[in-house]
Image 1 (cartoon, helix red, strand yellow):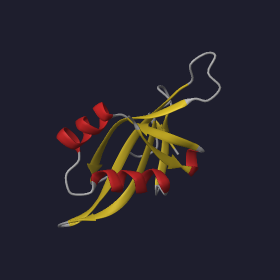
Image 2 (cartoon, rainbow, N blue to C red):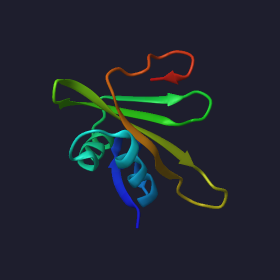
Image 3 (cartoon, rainbow, N blue to C red):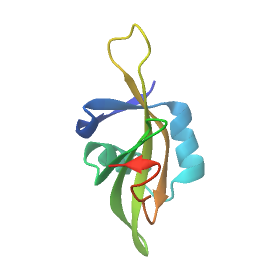
Length: 109
């Protein structure tokens, strides 16, 4: 059963499937409490950007990690299937990053 995180900034709930959770924990995110940090990122992000082409959303929040602060970044896609009243927002991936992409060619605030 997918987990759903509230995201007031996008006025939606963001779905995290079991498959995406396993992918994130196994390959991208270092550290403890990744799901709690991801929940906090979606609930109160420091940064929200949108990909100009794909429409993906990047949500990020800074957390203290051993050695230095790092961003938890969640990439979210909005599916709007025909005939469905509410769009589906779901996590594509999540990872840690020292820096975020700048606004520009791909991402816009």
